[in-house]
Image: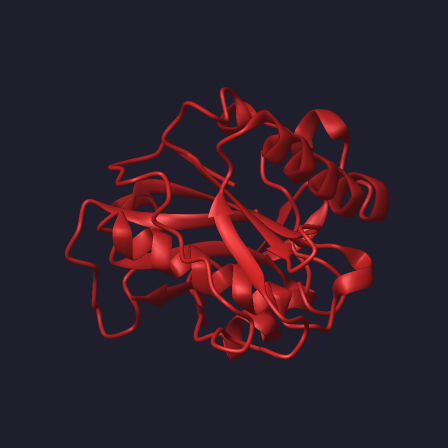
Length: 210
């Protein structure tokens, strides 16, 4: 099942689906300074890296639980799903963003999914020239750190990871109240899919070519 999404830089944030794909080095997510990254100015430095230790995974789960379960009321049994099994040894990427003090401020998940099942050609019939695309899910920003640009940082890191894995496009299920955030980040709504519910929350499918 999917996790909910809201505006990562306002209320919280993304998501769900299928099985993952080709991999590259586990560290192929940029670690960078806030001043050189998107939405800089929130702190002196920050990092975005894949979860590779039990401590990282504990921090990621704590943040997801705080946002999706405690804030948004998603049942705990639905928030952690089959794609969270063996998080340190699977093709599913779990991203953790930390501020300059090492505090976990944002989290997200990326999977490679079947392009035919997840990428509906736009009105002009354009499709992606690939068997799989990236699906971004479970994006969340710590409540007390929203409005500082962490959601945008997480999305940029996820897009870099998708490129490193050879995935040419990104799809996600956005809570309708978060659609504006993703639109500002370059995503367009898949109007053919319309609105739908996940875990009792209204969503829309959005997508972006990389």
